Image (cartoon, rainbow, N blue to C red):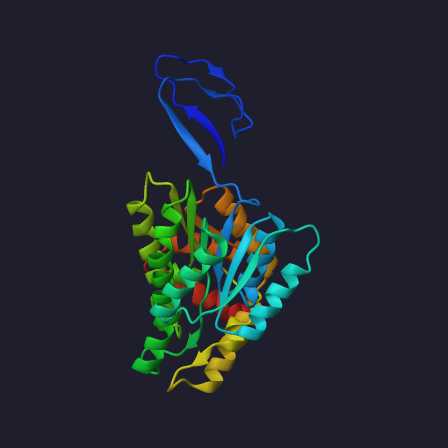
Length: 314
């Protein structure tokens, strides 16, 4: 844990440098001080990552291992998860412990057992990254109730189960951090992604409320909004029961064309955000732009974004 102090001057107007401050400039001296603490990820850290079989999850596992963290990796796809673990174990210079856990995050009993397995194998956990997620194409009218239930089970309830079962473990540590991965579709709501959007807005809302509830505790909370990241989520996304297949193929093509950020860069940005205790982590220039457009036009942003997409895909 690295730390520094700063204060807003009341009766003192001069500036003095404070030893070990995280800031490279002098700061006001005052008897009224706020202590800033930053999570340090190192060989003492145990990190839990869901959706670790590929994409951002696998890249996060590699990035955290490079910091020396021990890892509890979860995914429903056993073979791909094993490949992630194999890569980590073959990395030179890392003595971190890696455990694999085949988990369907939509199964609350399995997630509860997963938390027990992590404590049994590692003794503790400091960092939880709820990254597991699935995609679903289709408008509200094209999706079946079962389609929406399936997606919410993974994207929303999987995150909730992770928080509920790991938060007591994190609270027993001197410091902890929960990272829930939303999306830029937790900021804006594009056509044809109604269920996915609902799940990612839900992740964002749950995470922000959780952060407010845990304020002042040793457990920090961040929500992540990735833009277009080069993963297989669009290719693996399900079409809704009544979805138009040509429209689905077009949406996949648009996503794959727009996805410019590599999983490795996304993972680096997320780890950097955690180390800085950022409450909201935007991944990619596109995420930053989408966030700004939504702020500028909170009701009519889609008119502008829809026209931009049409121009880009012609």
